[in-house]
Length: 432
Image (cartoon, rainbow, N blue to C red):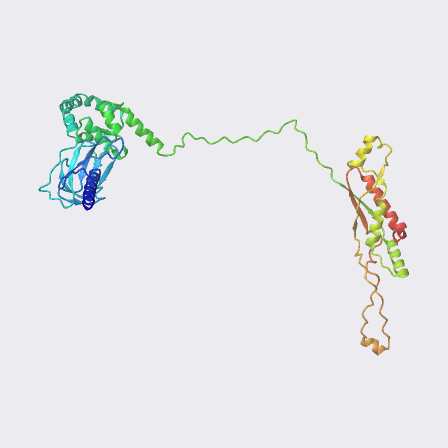
């Protein structure tokens, strides 16, 4: 039984060691044994990247690096990017150095080792893409043969192209003091043009920089005038052009229609006035006070006279018919309706004294004069002051006036005459 348990433990250890070795082979590192180096291939920094240029290596052979350190800088026709280490390690060997151009993605560019490995006894692995490399080396002779073709064409055709570009392009060939754009460098290299050739190409970019379109025009792949036309378009659109903007013409005032109906001018009201004496009213006021001890102000007499005068006035010519009158007209009762109506006149009184009359007051006793004492003359008794509002009220100074619409002068005149008759002839009617 014990031997069976021992056999199970041995088989379990063997299985776990086998799983560990398989897990190690599935890791990020491709080494299969201790002290075995790993190939560092050209990475693809974008889904569409097929090749790139190695600008500079940031570390040297034999230097150690940690995860996140920048190992090298890679250029493409679109951008320049840094390549960072994913794990700790040592740079054992650099197979493709600085300035290498058109390095295919997947090509071995260096060999790395684990931290602490002895580089002198390190086993350098074979290149992963040895077969593709041989295939890539095969078309090299045609590539070398194709290089002289652009050179011959460039030796024969550029003078004519440069003459055409001078005639049709506004750019001038000048020495490029700024670094060339990656797209320009890539285009020069693909077409077999040396870097010094960039100084001979007319440049239309900002500040005299060489653009990709300038190289394409120099190679004859596009029209020579296209880069200058495009640069001119950018220059024109870089600032706000107000030359095609015209001020809006001033709108003429609309002419008045000749047949326009004239504005209806409302007639102003007519002012009617009539002088009325309040002498009889004041006498009636005094009699009431003396007989029953009740004081009636003048405003009461005027208000009651106005109520009586507004009864049964001639119908107004400007008043709009009421709902009852319209209904009577539908029934045919308008012909038998009354020709009189109640008015709503309120007279305005000019020179009317205060209507609030106080009780008769006794004047303050006059002090004895020294002359009266010496002469033996008795001081006169104090006189009662007259009723307030009695002086200056009677006569033509009291003017009653009303405002009536035009056409109702007769109606207003009848009202004033009734007020005058009641106040001057029959003020006693106003007391009852």
